[in-house]
Image 1 (cartoon, rainbow, N blue to C red):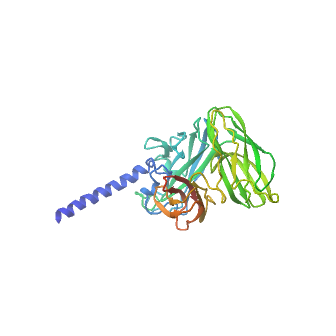
Image 2 (cartoon, rainbow, N blue to C red; image 1 turned 30 degrees about the vertical axis):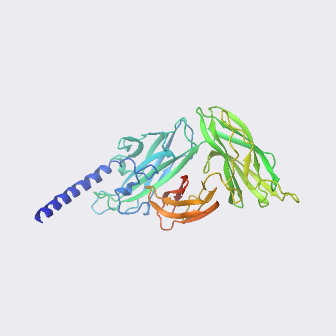
Image 3 (tube, rainbow, N blue to C red; image 1 turned 180 degrees about the vertical axis):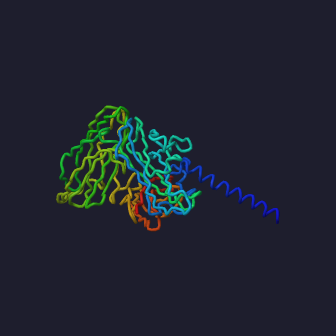
Length: 419
């Protein structure tokens, strides 16, 4: 028994020696991969574990441009509002941060150290920038990022901030996370469009002609897609075409949009977008469309919002007609619809459409990949389904919604909870 107590005493002594050493090392910069990004290891609550992320009264904020141009460098700042009560006998409040820039495939572009006195690469990893020992006395830091020539249409800046209480260890500190989306400037890739008419009968069709111009020095990949809304609610949305446009090239193409015979009469908003379907818009043209009653005895026409006669881009094969997600029509594969609203404050609605009856799982994960909500599970019929997320018990931050089917199809999207 005496030997056991002796061993425990040595172990505890080692733990108490290691604990402040870890705290001191982290005060000179957070280890790479803890900024709350989807590809990261989580956020700084892995070590600063006293409180859940985003549970304090402070904040971390990213101040960045909303657009970028491929090949060019932008400057942004990360700021921490530290309202953590300072520890008696401590060194006073201290702040830290970590940031990365990513798209759906992971890290993108090149981070640049703008202020080597107060910022550095985290653990020598050039995909993450963090504070230095001198920098943890600041509340704001400047970072630069260079977009690659083949940049995606949108990237997200992910940041975690530490509002420290000035103690020797991580206890009592609050951690906050933030995310900011930047899209390619429309001067890089632009879209113009015209409609053959703005009034159409139920079961009729409209012809659209669009021109996309790639003003960059690199090939750009993206989607042409439309979103149809009525009374503030989305009726249908789908890709028209996906392809790659060579640098310095402008293409003009056309397609036919069918209107369901069952479409309610009235006024619709038709947005034709270039970007990344369904959430990222680089440039857009919007039309006001009026649907009038079908002629007496009319039985023809489409049974869903569909597009046809799609003309391909250069060196691309013509695609099959695409069917929009709508009550009347079914998609070719399972589709996870954009959450609305997003960002949201307390609750949001998720929709998904199925081409056939199947087993589904619709779940919400935190940035560490842990399930925080199960919205749907089990057999579902073909068609459109909705599920509501009540986030009243969740901390603010970024979450991942994932839809899976028994056929192996998986779809994800990010949602942001704000308080």
